Each structure stands twice: as C-alpha cells, then as structure tokens.
Image 1 (tube, one colour):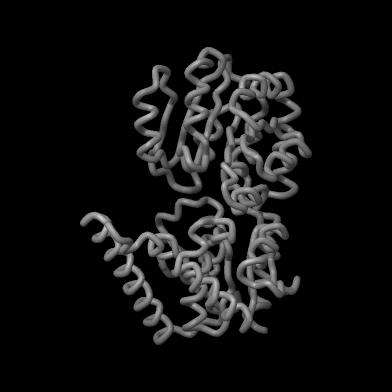
Image 2: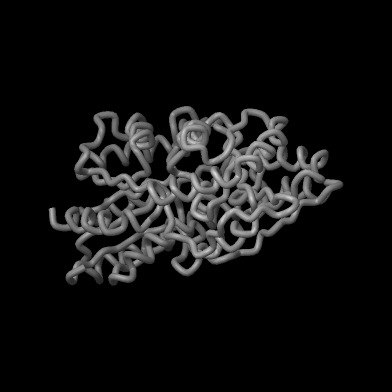
Length: 367
C-alpha cells in the first residue's frame, strides 16, 4: 500500500481467528504489510463482571476480564508510542472507542452491537459505550458495516444524525470462492447440516434435534461448530444421535465440512434486531451458498425474505414444517443449488469487494 502503515485491531489472536469472513479480510490487509493487534474485550464479558452473588469461579473470571483489558490496553499504548500508523481499523465498538482515544484516524468495522430492544442495553457498560461511541463518531465517522438496514439500526442507537454515504463501506459477510463447490449429487439419505453456534437460545438446535428423533429415516442430521453445554447434554440423551463435530478447524476450512452435506439449516431466534437483520450478516448462510447447498431457514428474520425471493431454499416458521421443506428442496434441488451459487457470485463473493475496500481504506488514510 505504498508504504502506508495500517493497524487492524481484532478480538481474537491472529493465528486463531475463528470467523472466516473476518480472517480472510484481515489476511488480505496483512498480506500488504498491515499490522494486527489483539483487543479481546467487546463489552460482553465485562457486562457479566462482578455481579452480586457471583461464585468464586465467576469472580475469578471477572478479574481475568479486567486483566485482559488492562494488558491489551497497555500493548496498544506501547504500539502508539513506538509505531506511527496512518490508519487504524478497529473491530466493534469497544475496541473502536479505545483506539480512538489513542489515534485520530480510526475506522469502525462493525460486526455485532447491542440494540435498544436488548435487556443488556440498559447495563452501565453499554450505556457508557453508547455515550463514548457517539462522541468518537462525531469527531470522525468512518464505518464498515454489512448493509443499509444494519447501518440504520446502528445509527438509531449510536449515531442518530446518521452517517454520510462517503463515510460508509458496505461489506456483507462474504467469503472467497470455495474449491468444494460440486454439481448437485444428492446422497441417498440427504444430510442436513447446521454450523456455527449450536445452542437453544439463538440457533434453535434443540428443536432441530427433537424433530430428528421422529424423522431420522428421512434425513441424516449433522452439527458442526461450538456446541454449548446444554446442547451437548441434549445430544447425549437423544435416542437417535446426529453426527457432531466441534473440532477447532481453521476458519478457512469450514467449507470442507459443508461440502459433505446436501442441505444447510440456518436458524436465528430473532429475539433482538441484530438477529432479525441477518440477511447479509450470516457467516452460516455464506458457507452454504458458496458450496451450492440449498438452505432451510427457520425463524422470522429478513433471511426468510431472501430465501423466498432468491429461491435458494425454503423458509419455515415452525420446526414441524421441516419434513415438508426437505421434500420441497429435494424435488427442486438442481434449481435451488444453482440459485445459491448465483447469489453467492452476485452478493457474497469477497473478491468482488476487496479492491474497492482497499481503495476506500486508503482514501480514509489520506483524508
């Protein structure tokens, strides 16, 4: 980048970034010589810290939270003193606020944020983040975010006056093309796969597991990702066991798992607007699209509209409709699969964005 020095601040160690989209964009910039720094706190761990009645284990975890904030902050201060950067890209609000205290030219790369409808939005830390973020954005507002709907949602809480178009780069959660795209070759018993966070509260994995108990002859069920303790117990108690994998794969290798399935299952419990406006912010969806795997979408989110509009699978409101949805997908499989690949190429192929993103970032550095 012509000798320009850029620092990216992320919430996971560089060698262990688990979000494929995040990892591929970071790798793109570090390949040009950009630096990467770790800042682990996102405002979520501290939200749970030192609450009344915590056990000793929870208190120790709270102490650890504050120690990581202190350590990561000291390291950032050291970078500030030792290295001159033209631009900093900070992932999510907490890191952005911290970086903006140290640097004058900071881009907010927004992935997740607390919305007004969430119970935790009234917690002191999130009130503080809201106040400080608005202050920093008023000074110099540059943001990378998935699409206009999420930008509007973001601004409704953190920047009510809105952001000018020139200050925003729309970057859907997207991935480089996969080598594991295969033309439609259905297995005799179709494999239905859910990836990502395997849990009850958000991904409705318990409902899927329950459905599988009475339909195990119709499809094979597979889970891959972070299976929380509650779901682990439910799986242990199940009569018909799904295939499960919680192996810590490299973020760029998830497609090797996806390529083995026939249908992707994507579910979001839209308990807050962050999960409602998920159409261009779902890493699960992109993994299926780029491998040409039709999806079944459960949950009343804007993902349902996308699935119906682009004919990339079937949207359902209740798990009882899953068997009919599978049958419909199988009947129209070649069309759905082709539409998945087409939508990926049009909207979710990261290669379509990287050159434009690089130019936009360089412009922000010289303004």
